[in-house]
Every structure is written in C-alpha cells, then in structure tokens.
Image 1: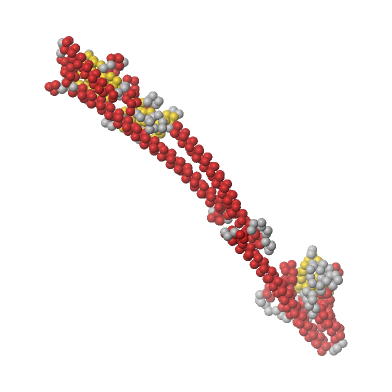
Image 2: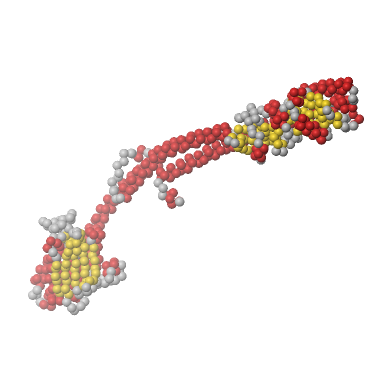
Length: 591
C-alpha cells in the first residue's frame, strides 16, 4: 500500500488528501446531525418528563384533597349525628331532620371540593342513600353500587380508590364511615365519591410546551384507569412501557413516551407524543443536509480539481522537460509560459532546471569536442606505434636476406619496402579502399616470400565489387604478420595464408586464415586483462580492436577463433560506398 501511494501522481495525491478531508467533513456533518437528533430527543424527553411530573403531582394533590374531604366528612359532627340518628332512631321526624342535615352538609362539601373534578357524592346506610346529583346516581348500575359499598365496608374506615370502572363510569373513592361518639366505631354509613377522570386529566395536562398534542395513559397493575381518546386501550400496550422513556409503534404510528409514577398511589402515568411528524421532520432535515453536503462536496471537488490542475500542470511541463533531456534532446522545449517572473517553488524549479540544461549542453559540447580530439590522438598514437615497429622488422628482414643470399634480390625487396613505407607513412587518410590495403599486404608478402620461399603460400579471395569498400588502414597487414609469425617461425612446416572478403547485408567481413597455428580461447579478453603476456606482435591485435571500436563503435569488431584446424582473424566493418575519385564516401575525409 505504501508503494502504491508513493507511485501515485502528484495530482492524485493532492486529490486524495482533499477527498479524505471532505470525507471527514461529511462524516462529521452526519455525526453532528445524529447528535442533534439525540439532543432533540433528549430535550423532548426532558420537556415531556417535566410536564408529566407536574401532571402526576397535580393528580396526586387533587386526589389527596378528595381524601382530605373524606376524612373531614368522617369527622364532621353533623354527619356523625345525622348518620347516627338515621341508624338508631325510628321516628320519622328525626329521620327527616337528619336527612336534611346530611343532604345539606354533603352538598356543602361537594361545592367546596368540586374543583377537584368531583362528579357526584353519595352516602349509603342500609336501604337509604343521599346524593348530590340524582341523575348521575341513576346511571350507576346496582351491581357496581353494591360492589362499591362492599369494598367500602371491607376497608373498615380506610380510604380506597376503585379503578375497575374508570373507563366507563369514572374513578371512585369509597370510605366506610365509623361512629366516633363514645368510641363505638360501628359502621354508620358508606361514602362514595365519583370523580370525572376525563375532566380531571384534561384540567391539568398542559401540552403547550410540547411540539405535538400529547396523549396520556393512567394504569395500575395492568388495568387501565384512564387513556386519551386518541390512544388505544389494549392491555398489551402496557407491556411496551418497559423503561422510563423510549419509542413504541402502535399500528402504523410511532410514539415517543415518558413514564412516571404517581406519588403515594403507586399508579403509572404515561405521556405519549406522536413521533411520526418529528421523524418526518428529522428525515427531511437529514435529506436536506445530505443534498447540501453532496452539492458542497461536488463543488469542493470541482473547485479543488481546477486549483490542483492549475498547480500540477506546471509540474507536468517540468516532467516533459526532464524526459526531453533524458531522451537526448538537448534543445529546450518551447513553452509559452515564462517562469522567470515567478518567485514561488514552481518558478524556482523551472528556472533552475532551464539553467541546468544550458549548463549541461555547454558541458556536452565541450566534452564532445574533447572526446573527438582524444579519439584522433588515440588513432594517430596507435598508427605511430605500428609504423616504426613494422619498419624496423622489415629492415631486419632485408638485412638478413642480404647476408644470406647476397644482393640479388635486394632491389625487389627494397622496391616493396618503399611501397610499404609510402602507404604506411601517409597520415592524411584514416580509411583506405580495400584494394589499397591488399596492395600493402602484397608488398609485405613479397618481402616475406624471399625469406620463407616455398614454405609460405598466399592467396587473396576478394570479389571485385568489394575492392572499393573502405577499410581501416593498417588492419590486414598486422594480422598477416601475426599469422606468419605463429604459422612459420614456431614450426618447420609450411603455412598457407588466405585473405577472404565477403558481404553480408550492409556489413563487410574480411578474414585472414592460416593453417599453421591456432588461437588460444578468449585471447583478446586475456590480453586485455593481462592474464597472458603478448608474444612479439600480440599488442597489435589489441591495437586493431581498439581502432575499430573508436572508429565504428559497436558496429566494428575483431574476432579470433579456430575452425577446421585453421586460425581465423575476422574483421567486421560497416560497408562503405565504392571508392571514387580518390575519396572514401560515407562522410570520411578525402584520402
């Protein structure tokens, strides 16, 4: 991965950095939206919890007021006396007076405490009953009335709340009234108070601080006491409220709920707020944020791409300049933009590179001329090394021949020697036609024939059309001289030397073949590495090879090998155009 990143282009690296930065901003934006959603839910919970706590406390207060009223009725002398007369007296007049007293007192309590949403109040003693509202009392079935009286008596003076019939008939408070006179504590009546639960809940459940109209559920031990008309009254719903707040789904609607406990009574009070609109609002906000974010990302990517291109194009131009220089093109590319007026990094890079290219070109021109002069000096030095060497050996041969045979053949040998000296000492030409090089070899062989007589045979096999081809001067004669030395001087048998020329495509091959000796394997490499010591003219082989490489480069070569018990020295030279009018074609100097 590191290698992949390192090999990315500068533009892609910068784009990657910009993309990662934008991606971090997008993730941060979505995270902020999520945090905002959670904060909204928390605020909603706190608001609903505050409202519900107030409602629960208000409900508890009003029910306590009713309990207080019941205790006051229990302790009221008029109520005690009237109920006692009703129970003990059989006189109609006393009972009538007692009834009026009880009715008046009961209604007084009703009017004083009706703000606590009391619907009606009833007193029961045996077969008599006193009511604040006859019409409301008549709506209550006898079975429920009997159940309420039974519960009151079973409570033995306790204030009890009956929630079994709250959905249809409202909430009931029942209390058995005991005689306090003389501490008899016998039952003298039962008080039943009916509370309008709907009116009670609606009177203090304030939804003004909530975004949506809330619904309420009041229940105890899995039994509904009250639920808003907008909410279902299914008992399975009560099992969904397993935490202090959360979300529930009823049919196709989502609700956010908060649950609290009514103090003293142990009732569970739940506030439910429709959540679909909130969710829809959050989704719309989220979608809007996503669209805005995507548009911002697109705009940022487009703008950053334009800005990045405006920077990287100058580096691309610099790369083109470098590649142009690396390809060997010393001429600078023509760029319309002038970087000399810029002082930033891009301007400095381009200006310094252009200056470097100019300096390199100057060095190349200087070194190129020096290299040409060096090659000229090397070529002349090699030629000068060989010419005196050959001259001294020839003079030695003539001296030896003169001593052995007298002066009979001196004339012809001297004539051949003169021709050799004329060709060899000509410093104007580097290359000569093949016929000229063969003429020089012929003169050399004339001299050597006088020395070795019949032991030396010489043959030239060269097609006439190759005689005009250019060849490096003084390349065949050292090879023939080397063949004679190793073919005759170190054995007593005869030696046959052949010079064979042939053309293969645009290459001239000239081979010097002798049957009197063989070449050691990799002789030239060993001579260069000084692994063997040259014998006599061994240095001439290296000189020929170096001259070929300096003149023709890799296209010219000298190969030494053995084939069919013959030693072969093969020259490979790029083929030149035929020699015409004293001049070697192919761009060489006139000869």
